[in-house]
Length: 131
Image (cartoon, rainbow, N blue to C red):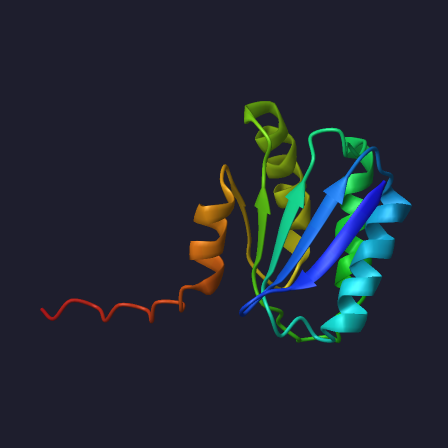
């Protein structure tokens, strides 16, 4: 496995290539945490199709990320770009396991859509209709 973490305009981009393991993914997460303590910036993960992690490890990865956050802390959002429909389904399964995390995660089919979501300001909640 190899990876790159690059600071882009307003977010971090993480590229993962080749076969990987749970421990290697946790290594990437620790490095990203070192670069952006508290997850103040959103991050974009572009993961090759070959970078498969057994589904049984998804919960452990999510818990490893959760352990980096102090109680009550909220991090910025994460986008993941899938390489095909099957890969997207796998990443959606991870997203379900990662629902314990204090930030939003979404899976996209293209980098452009992911970047648009990451860099768009969050819309304020709409006011209730007047009656």
